[in-house]
Length: 77
Image 1 (spheres, helix red, strand yellow):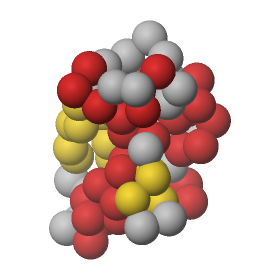
Image 2: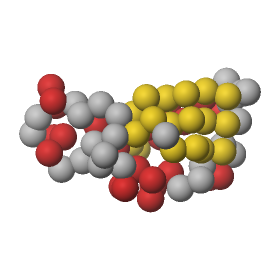
Image 3: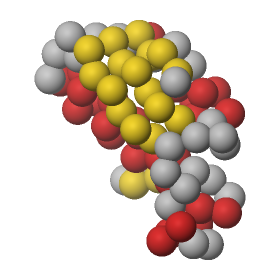
């Protein structure tokens, strides 16, 4: 199964938090928001993910890499 996740928001409403890190990488309970999302996707049978990212996606790409840590195949869009 496949899914698409939009992680390209600038999160203007989260200022000043978003000036340092993209909203998807903000920590909640010790993990980035995007990691909570990935875990839920895997629990629901998703194996392949198309992740739409914004301009400041280097930290997210570095953290998520190819997704194998979650048994996912991640394609960055």
